[in-house]
Length: 551
Image (tube, rainbow, N blue to C red; front, side, top):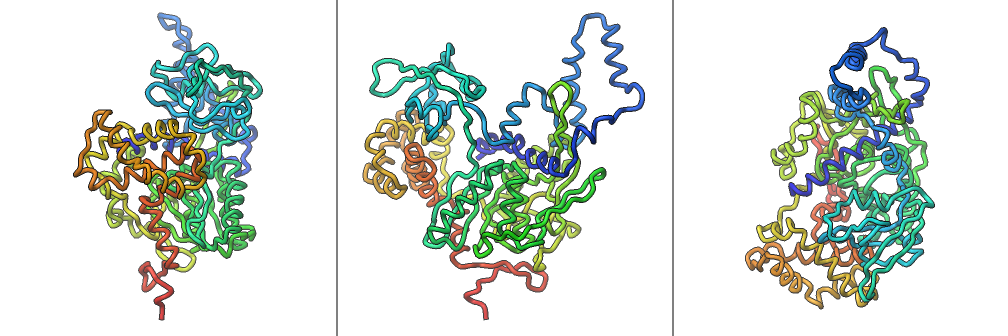
């Protein structure tokens, strides 16, 4: 679990600020007019010191470098999300915001110092020249990237580039005697934010949203139309580990569920007048029953969506307390191509909750808060979270909700520790399930390619006894069979194996329906949706109510 947290936190921090930036941009504050002309009276102390260094220091120095290093240190004295973006990083930031970049159109993974193609984006530059899943990328232009401890960042930098530029890629393919060379013309590659939309049962759809980008709303609407046409009357929206992104996208999505005039959020700061966002009355999905899953890595735009649904009593929130990122940034361009992300306001849910976690003890404590929450057992016991009465608010129907850091769900679901064992942990730490799944899919690709549904993979891999083959593989990697550990962990190991193998062949349509079997939060959401459970306020207490048992 700690390994997973360590991987997710930097991503969460990097991406969640995007919502705040977009909120700032939507407040109709034009940086060129609002900030140009803002001058500090006279020569400030920092400029004075730099001048003395430049004119009198014993050695020659580059004051520009000093300034670049000093700016972040100055900003550390503010909030955790005010930041400086150097000119060299601006392109990546813009790609992050627009939800697309220019590249060759493959999803890859690095295993055993080899870059392996997992998926080729349909219609993308690589698919047009014949790159196939399972290919190994060994060379990019003149750079050898096989067997040299290459890292993801290096590969991305080599494969990405300006649109319409060319890159020469060397490929090793099973069955081919020699290295194959492909000249690929880079093109715009969309970053999809909807992983999957499918029917869990005859009347319940499932949509997984991994981030909020400019195209998320259109992807979401397509997903909703798909499940509606398949007979869905309910939808479970999965926002777990979604760090946020585009405010425009989340506002549009919320608008499709709320009635005209119902509040979505408002923003306010000392130098920022209050700005309120209300629903327009589109209400395309007004007849759908809504269930939203969140966890400790759901942040920013995810919290806006969950908070709006909860405060308007429009949907049931299921999971664990969200991250707590409720600050608004405005991105201010600077003269050298760099930019300042300045926090200008906070955003508030319809009931008036500010969901921003406290950062009064400093930025380091703020970023370490997610570890503190794990150590305090918050992810295991709902009652371990305590809020002061001063942070109590009420929803549209009078239900009690709390501010003070994140969105608390209506139904708490602890982290699932069933199936855990020392044996499984050893396998997990070495990443053996993932590497075996790739190797198995690659070796049996011809047979597996005839399967098109998750259920087909499930039954086929059971017949092939893939678990037994994996146990032998793990033993060969230094983790001998442990029957006691298997008694606890065989279900989770076998299910993950089948899900990852299916993903390597048919993508997310294979992965999610299989992994559902061991996803305790999703299983709880399905249970709640089947019973049509509601949350009501009775005598000042939130109470779970089953309409079927009502008098």
